[in-house]
Length: 502
Image (cartoon, rainbow, N blue to C red):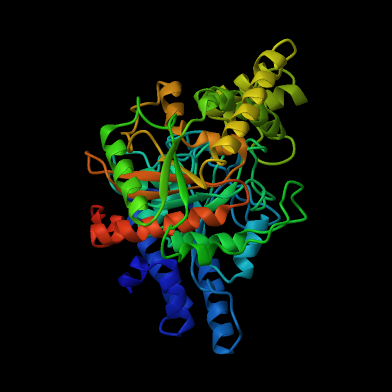
């Protein structure tokens, strides 16, 4: 049974379809793994044992009855705890939503259920997805399975760690400035940020509405493509949803070569600040792309130098507006002042003071400031102009190349506490991923090897909006070549977690 957790989602789907294993057995194997190692990894905030097994049993019954089932039916999945799930606790890793149970499902959760995919539980994150290390969760740190003293990335460290620790074959993450791709890079997994609007945001607890995007976290590029086709597509409940169908990703992930493809190396996403081992791994992967038939050119996107600054004005501004709804009046935590009159204003202040963590408060204060009278044009308005320049740089670069590539993150996973006292140093971890969110284009991170410290490095591929299939073509070919070079998946080189009965 333990061998089931090492299988990819595609392999599990084939075994299930051939009736060589049951959905209950597959789900049970992953629940057993969670019980054995999650006390150390801490990827999950909430587990969903009974409902997951019931959903698996329902899939088995339908399969026995001869029903035609979706390809991933019976393959279990973990969901980031910023995605609402009906009847299951959803906290966004914040005390202000402690024990809150939503009355409805996010659209992507509805699609997972319709596909017959048992939900194992809800994964940890930085509070309201604000952070780059999953050290800002109100419920404790998630640990990197490669080294339990290091961060698993953020904000979606829980989803990436769950997949890397073989607790789940698939997971859902959300990416506002790199929160799928950066955790994937430091945990040796695959993470995809789809084109903005191609996966419904209905039911995501919003941080920055013009930047947030849900997407797959997996161990292989093909698995990401399979999951993307399940959760993608138009949703009338989301006013920003694109009409494009979520098709063609699986076929692209199975491409044989890159003949005729132009790959652009982004000059501004490398060099100073990038660790030597990260650069070396990136350069080796670029050579493999050439061997697969790709033409490699260098492109320049000068406005990227201002992307980080623009992001940390636009994102807090939107976050301060979105988080205004958490006021102690309608749902979640309610704290009443112990002295003086109990007024609405004082209840709101007491609730938000007790319910929000330091990083959330920092961003609310910053966002409120940049939107205030007298500062709007100087800060928020200027940042939006930079955003337009970044979009123009991308358009020009994609005139010279079909996809753009860079390291996903400038360094490997750092130790807990190393950057907590320096928010600016923490923010710099997203320097390579943020431009894609500002432009609304898709990106993928896949493991490209190990750095000098023996920790995984991520390789990022970016494509024009609505051209997500290009990510899967490049990612699939590169993954196959790297796997051949390594003699197996990179995760096979990770230290074995100590398994104890719990």
